[in-house]
Image 1: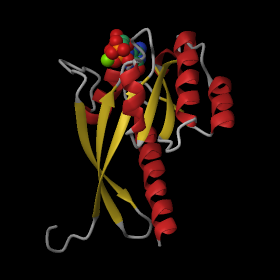
Image 2: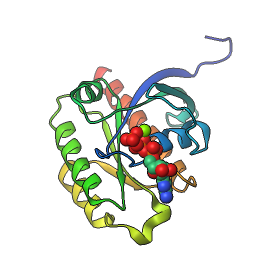
Image 3: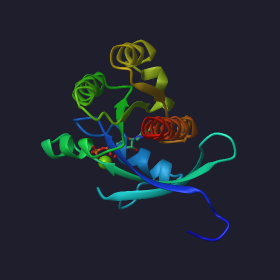
Length: 183
Ligand SMILES: Nc1nc2c(ncn2[C@@H]2O[C@H](COP(=O)(O)OP(=O)(O)OP(=O)(O)O)[C@@H](O)[C@H]2O)c(=O)[nH]1
Ligand SMILES: [Mg+2]
């Protein structure tokens, strides 16, 4: 650690899944978060890193390296989710089947012993006038499984900062809880 720097450092793995038939916007979302662009040129299913600084309360800060990984809906994804700190389940709000799939994923995740932080991301908010998935559907998942949700547009960046804040807040409060338990 550099002299004069006392920030804690953590690495968190974030799986990005959802949209079985393809096209819910997982790659675009990762690109928007990591590069602030939805171009996603040449992006393969590898790990994408981005470093954030988050508050631990008071003046204490934490440097968090987030590793984003896009998953498909195969068996190997289920085991990848097991090793994640957080899961973003991307729903195309204009496609009912992508919501049905999100329900299945959330059901799976909520049955895990070590549940990753789960955020349902309603994507394509720029097409909200064509939406078939809206607040009611998200609220029912939130109520039943205690997951968070938000609406974004990977295409133009709307709602992305809010999503990043929820992700960091959720992950930070988990380590705060763990530290309390170990104290
Ligand atoms: N209108 C709109 N289109 C979007 C948005 N996000 C993604 N798309 C479009 O949706 C399509 C699929 O986006 P991808 O990012 O490739 O989706 P994906 O989930 O990675 O798809 P697969 O890897 O095939 O499962 C592309 O044509 C994107 O341009 C958005 O916020 N608004
Ligand atoms: Mg993709």
